[in-house]
Image (tube, rainbow, N blue to C red):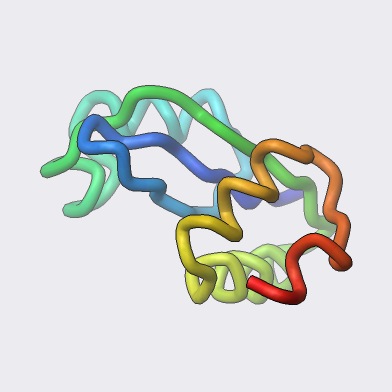
Length: 90
């Protein structure tokens, strides 16, 4: 099982990644071991998670979300359920 996750950083930006263990990965990010971006921005909290059955599916979804503007990510976070009708126009 893989997860796509969105984390709020200290500067208000949203980081998107994948993992098999959200708690472990957030702790790594918090300790500055999660990658250059979160190391420099500091992490605040997990905003959203999504389950995927395999790494390939999670990577594809991560790439899709990373391509979105901030507004579209915020809608996804607010709704917690993927509703394509609300996201198409953004």
